[in-house]
Length: 286
Image 1 (tube, rainbow, N blue to C red):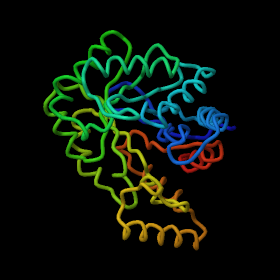
Image 2: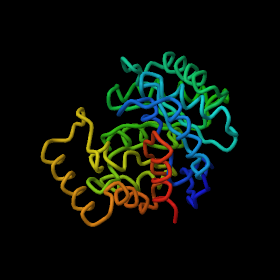
Image 3: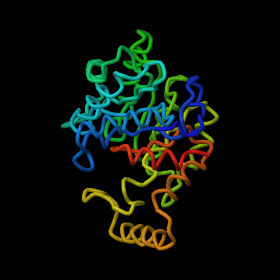
Image 4: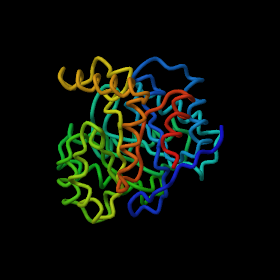
């Protein structure tokens, strides 16, 4: 339960100082494997007690369960010490980037999370929508919520790196304040480095998610639905076995590699149990 020495970095020009390790809320929604609610709540508290202050979730994770459970867990923690991020546009059964629709669902997320404002709202996996709609409709809707004080900062997320510049170049500077990119700051794929200078020039915060490449860089291995081809899966499994034979976990190596990227504001890692939190917090303490 001791507070680890987890450093903090600025999230772009938002004024937020975020722990370099942040709490990914998808596992407590049971997206990877079944997780008891009580265990998930304990994981959130362990994260806070370890010095983690950035908590990320989405209505898509676990068919709303992740938001509901995170809300329950955070309710007993000091709100002003928490940086809470959720998403809109991707939902358990569909995508919808319509301005009125995302406005409604952001408010529903706030109810599930039991808060009266969100520190960060992100448009989730924008490559599945029309990027021009994101520019002309979704972002302006979120800007309105920002003016109303319901959200404080706005970001976009997705897998293909080319989507970020397309959107950012078409909106006023400062509209997009952060991005969440996943699987591109890892031992297996470090292509996030190719867009980092562009983002830094514009003061845009960078959240690097899935340092373990959605389970590829782990001893447990990826879930069945993982999109990686067989050759990549086998290579990563060999790397994990090699690290293990040397007395080192591939997870720890992968996470420490991500932390070394000083231009990244925070490394977002999904955690479901207090033991996972403790292990990752140890890796992040330096």
